[in-house]
Length: 434
Image (cartoon, helix red, strand yellow):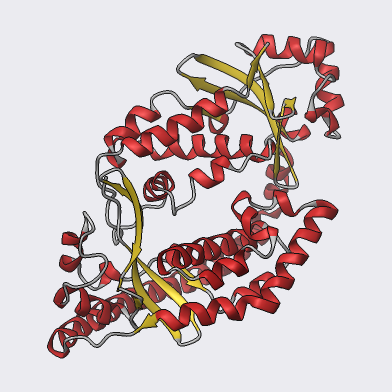
């Protein structure tokens, strides 16, 4: 199968440079991954104009045989600009590792380490692999914040931070040594530089127009505020009566206890269970990675009344007693919000057809469910499969984060369908029907 070729920006000691990356693709039964370069050199450029001039005029490089390469020389300069999700500040890693291990810090660091590992694989940088294997924290970044919680998690983060502080320069030096900035055809560069300048001018003009509109809106709002203030003096009594009459919308029982009923729709049928988040970490009804489910809301309430305090991680949540009491009294009403309905059925077939056949809302919710269940079970297989360095992860990212400058994934999508099916089957194996 063919896979995208992606523009990326690398923040290196010699500056912010742009290059191309081909995530893993399979061809003739073998798996490949590559960057723009030749032999021992990794090609990178000061901006997208230089990159465009190179790909339009040079044929001898490691991406020339990629199944999707024919599309790249036809791209405009704006289409070769790296998007924000493919900008990797390698120089800033020590500063990042000095922060607390929250989800944003972990997420950004995981993305950088993933691309660094790919660079080390493709460019055969043993010294980089040596650094990345010297602290256990590098291997679990894709799992999110969970491995870095608690006393042991803090120690894991401290060891990782210390390793980065002491040895990250080895990583930067190794990558910097293989980076070459090739010369490009001057006439073509003049054209691409004009393209980039025109795009930047157009973008700046559009931004200025938006700023002007915002300023006009602020002036109008200020005038309206003055009028409103004068009017308020005359109608203060009426306003107070209106405020007294208006009641805040009730959050409901489930909102008060912070636990959500959820519905899961698979090829086998519909299932109901409960889930909450504690310190942003998911917790399901069940234990040891097994999720208790029932075929109906009524059956779920009955199970909670009879067995809700047995082998159940949710029993540790402070508000669980309220749920258990209502269930025991026969007053527990289980209603599932739309945002908590997860439809897994049909997605595998849609993925096989390609991005246009997949409902992004359905996929986004399904990914949320699979990630939550895996995080709760301390299972890193979902995070690994959905990493952008994997073909499935790249396809999912393309669907959920659309960007007109990104090349569309190319068919066939058999490998992605198989990978998704394995994730869903592993999730369904977690379900314990009561």
